[in-house]
Length: 94
Image (cartoon, rainbow, N blue to C red; front, top):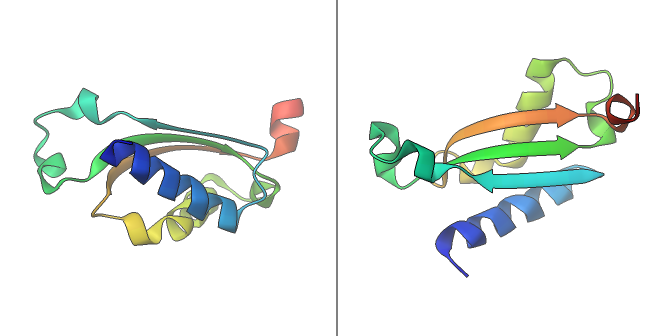
């Protein structure tokens, strides 16, 4: 298992501890940012798509804060940049 696969597995585990996940997709986009000054520290660029009931009624900023709180131990060492799409299940079904 590569270092980024290990990182993604750890992110997955921490998110599942914080949310009742209906759907989760984590993609490593670090290769798109090769040579980026901020990535020199070793932290990667990731895209996260998450569907969980905890996001119902929360605005975008509150949703992002909840995700950042769940992944706090990984920022900034393992996660340099994170693109987040956080939805509640009813937003998917409608």
